[in-house]
Structure formats: C-alpha cells, structure tokens
Length: 322
Ligand code: PMV
Image (cartoon, rainbow, N blue to C red):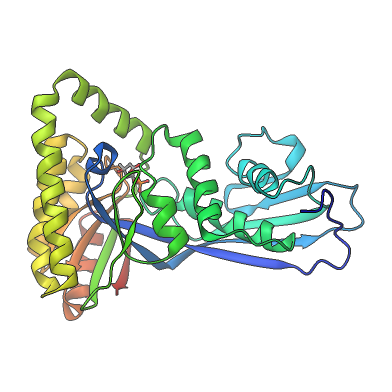
C-alpha cells in the first residue's frame, strides 16, 4: 500500500447504503439469541467524495447538510461519527493522510428511529472514501468499520445493523457467529410506521442489561422465548406461507413489552395496524420510540398505512421484502 496517495486526477466517487429493519429478535440478540433483519432500500445514506486539489494538502472538508454540519476533519473530534469512519479507513489502508478532498454526506434514513441510519452512513463513507483512494475495502472490512463506529456510540452493539446494511440482504444473525443469508421463498410487504419519538438504543439496551443483572431468572425466559420465535420465523420464511409470520410478529411484540422496551405510542400503533387488517405487528429496533412494523397483504397496505398515520405515526413507508 502506498504511504501517500495524491488527489490529482482522482475521479469523484459516490457510494450509498440502505436502511434496515429488524424483523425479529432485537434485544434478545444482544444475549446470544438469533435475530432476523432485512435491508430497506427506499431509504439510503449517501457519501460522495471529490478531490479538492486547490485546498491545503490533506484537508478533508465534510458537508452534511441534513444535520447542518460543515467542517474540516481536523476540526472534528476523532471519534465524531462523521470523522471516525475516515480515520478507520485510513488506518485500514495504512496511509498517514488522505489527499485534499470534499465529502458530502446525505441520508433519507430517519435518525434515531431503528432504521440503521448511523451504520448506513458509516458504510457509505467507508465505501466511498476507500474507492476514492483507489483501494475499495472488502465488505468484511466495511462492515467492521461500521461496527467499530457503532461500538463507540452504542456500547455493546450486537453487530446486526452493520451486517445487514453492508451485505444488503435478509440475514439470520447470531452475535459472534458468521451470519447466514436468508433466501425467502415468497416476497411479502411490510408497512413501517414512525412513532416520531427519537429514542436512544444505548439507553434502552443498558436498561435491559440492568434488569437482566437484577433478576436473570425473570428476563432469561423472555429472551429464550424470543429466540424460539425467531427460529420459527426463519423456518416459515424459507419454506411456507409468509402470512403466518404475522402471528409470530405480534408474539414477538408481546415479548418485547414484557422486556419493558415498548411504550404506549408504539403499542397504540401496533394495535391500530392489527385492527386495520395487518397480519401481525411489532416494534422494530431498540424500542421506546422509533419505528414499528406491520406485515400486510399488498392490497391492505394503504389502509394500514392510513390507520397508522391516524393513530399518530409521523410517517409510513411500504417496503417489499424478498
Ligand atoms: O435501534 P436499532 O435499530 O439500532 O436496533 C437495535 C437492536 C438491538 O438489538 C436492541 C441492539 C443491538 O445491538 O442488536
């Protein structure tokens, strides 16, 4: 690997990464149970990099209009979520500095809502910067950079977000084990309802940890029950009728309620979906806000989405899985 890369004649590069939803198994996945996640391609994070040969050597300008950030890399703390991926790419490629360039980062993925916005931004940045430097990182390297960024902000992430977003496929994920790609026999439709409440995954995960440590015998059965639901869901996804998944989704929501990670607004949205023709519904992600998901037949999608908005969802999104 060269120790210095010049920005002369470097073509501009753009890379993107999708959002994600966890279909089954959030929280329990932190404790070694399996989980299933799928990419959501209607929302994307995007990073473009263009050489800036007139800027002082090594100056990296970062423009992230969605969050009102315009800065140079030097001005940001090294662990800032938009600086860390750059340092990690540099480290991975073994180069001391990046040639002068401008980065523009945009995203249509709602922040702090369980759709993986942080991991998607890291993945898009790692891909764009490494490609700009002429040394595109492998998926494994990109995923591990996004994981390290997540660790800085989310304490003990399971790794499911960076994996599903990097590999852009439905996955069956067990913490610390190689993930498995799921081949879905039948496509199905999911309506995503955004509660509009921004929620900190790290806070909710910490709270579950405290409850677990205080009373493992009351939390362990819930985690095991979630693991069982996830394995049943996998069997359905790979074999039979995905509509049966609805029952499992709602069961998984009840277990998450028992775990204490839901909230009245999410419960209300889940109820509204079920009362308006959804086959099943649950919160998705860290909980206490963010998004919920509802499995629907395609012809019921508009009705369920409308019911969710009437019940307080600030936005809805329809996604086809598989
Ligand atoms: O809030 P999200 O979408 O980042 O999902 C968090 C999922 C958890 O299982 C709660 C935590 C994790 O690291 O897997």
